[in-house]
Image (cartoon, rainbow, N blue to C red; front, top):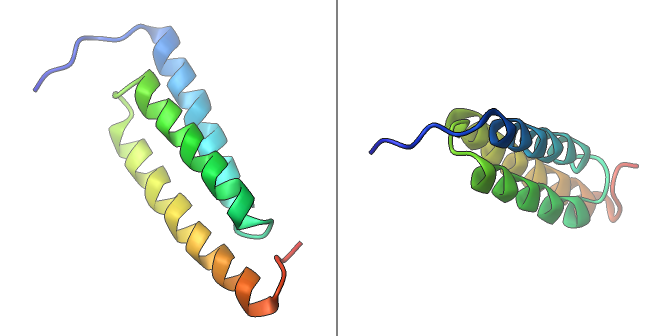
Length: 84
């Protein structure tokens, strides 16, 4: 399946949303994962909607957000509080 070429503005917007998702995903590891996890997922979905050209980066970010959420949640539950 081929996709129509997208404008540079849409790709730039997708990369901005992807950067927000990745940064939020990293921060959620040590700071309230149950609040920042959904924010990271929403930013990731916005990135996918904006552009489909960054498929590999989006997939990598989705795995990273998921793993960091699980690890951050485990730390939060184990120590009864986040690491902050």
